[in-house]
Image (cartoon, rainbow, N blue to C red; front, side):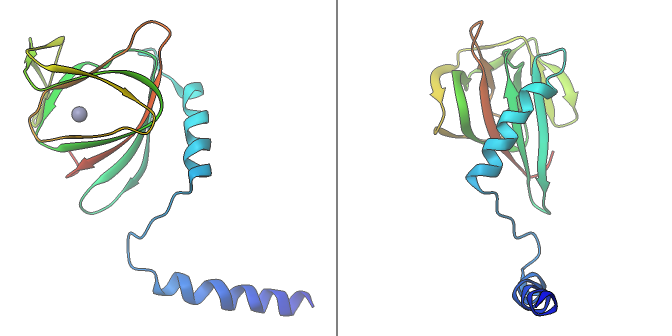
Length: 154
Ligand SMILES: [Zn+2]
């Protein structure tokens, strides 16, 4: 009986795995929830935690948890945010104040001048195009969890 069960399992799963296209990926809502719940325990001194979920040829996927505001940033890649939990303010556009190179393709600064502030919360999706200034601002006591797709990988 055990042998038969094993045979069935390998018959069921092996051909599927062998036929999967490269980079095919699926995260269930339960897996995303588990990751979101685990991240707060991994926060650094800056009160944020980042976990790279996948790196494909063209893009990468991260989950970010914050209890503090992010630096103002602008970079050559696109950010695609899917807010998973919590809420905050996202400032978009305008220009980064006091920009300093973070990498050859990215600057970080203290704030944004002339941007548009929007309230974001779980369920919201935001596309941040290349070179657009952006900054997440949190009030004391707020937190936010968001999935980020970087295209291309910075
Ligand atoms: Zn960014």
